[in-house]
Image (cartoon, rainbow, N blue to C red; front, side):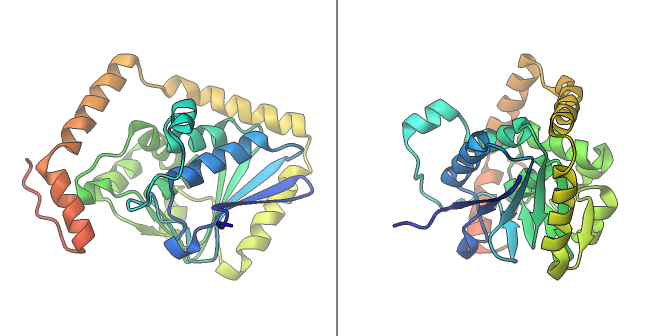
Length: 259
């Protein structure tokens, strides 16, 4: 039997969801993301979710570019883009979701963490989103989530440089809420989860809905969405994008020409 890519463990009113691909630094695949969304939508009698990666080396290193699709075309048609499905399942989950971050939270893994309501990082964490390093553009929903987390100027610096930052810097700019020694991360996280779980569930859930509604006005118009998708398509078809991907695979510095 194949190993489960997502582990679900519930103790009382707290549920832990673990991305279970430690041999790939918990890199994300369509299967992982769909199973994450499915799990969140199926949970009952849960007041807090803790999201983490297996082991202590990575929350998630981002999308697994070398993975083969292990989901059906029917599932893709029904649920849409896998990252969107997981992201919106976190946002729409009626109670707080806490990211417990060991090690790397990079690319889409950083986006997944930033989507969570609260983020607790071990002091060995490193975070960032770096598509510009390989000639790519991150999609607007993820950029918006980083703006909400760290503010406009800090988000611009992260995306323009493609820089990965350490846990202390992430705490300084608001990308994580707390940084603790790695050995204290579980106890700190579950103490916080327990404190939330003890509060009135209807009040906590209603408060999360209010936060979501207050952010709802940030959605793009159809015209803006079309313009952005056209820009992304142009970049994806560029020679710089092909060069960036080749350099990434060959583990060398890319030579970008602006074409």
